[in-house]
Length: 392
Image (cartoon, rainbow, N blue to C red):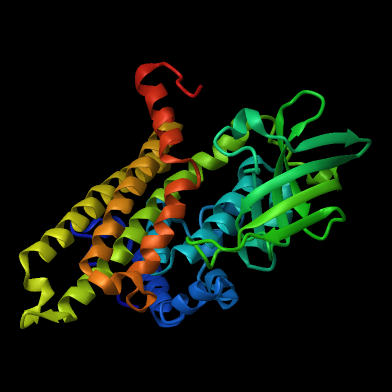
């Protein structure tokens, strides 16, 4: 399949991809534009997830990128970033599903699981045979998860008993397993558990009335004396530092998804401005509209440069927490500006789903907040540059 660079990748960063990676991007893009773009507004309006996308995502190898046991072919972090960009360029909800399935759920097992756990669970997640979720955030614990978790794990012979609550857990209304992070009742250290959602005492309730990422099925989870065997405890998750290893890897891909969301809104604005005629000519020929579009493109271009570099650092083993934190904080901030300017270019039509910009505008708000708010990521970077922690 022929690869065509995106016009919105103004400095052609995609040219850094290998020929094989470009072919994979072209295949993914063709499927997204043919099968996802035409239906996603309807699913967004109904607040339903298009379940039919899971099998093609698995077939295209998207659910197995990055993990050795299931790698479709050798690929770089830069390539995985462009995959996240392509997904979010069409729908941030599908990008979020993949981020949870492949990044957070599979990633937790890949980073913190034993060899036996990786061999058992990762192939099933990569094939889409099972769906995963990631349970860290709680009703009363979000940004302070490192110290503030209230979910407790109590050892009982060869089992663990989990009690607590989780909130905002993506995929959780239809997941087969959820990675639950809980504090050890004995020493207070954070541990991770692979919890089948059919386990007695586990319940998930969909969060309703959202204005952002409506296709993502977020849930409140209640854990009441949920018993899991020691074999389901992530064997290499012994403190929140291990949890943070997973978040560092996925945070950069959220930054990539923010760039994709920006591009989706910008491309919708360009299409509209080219077609919409006012005062006898397309509004794209008006100076003020061109100013909006160029500001959008500047934000996108600067953000692509940042996320490409942070992924290159990951490939070289040089990326640290503050690097991915800066990328997430910056790219999501520029995204917020870009989707607003793009929506503005559509005038009144910018607030209806028909022209796509409204959906990107609304979905951007969730990306701006999840996987670390701008403020928390700023403090991670601030600690790095000053040597002083200012979290409390």
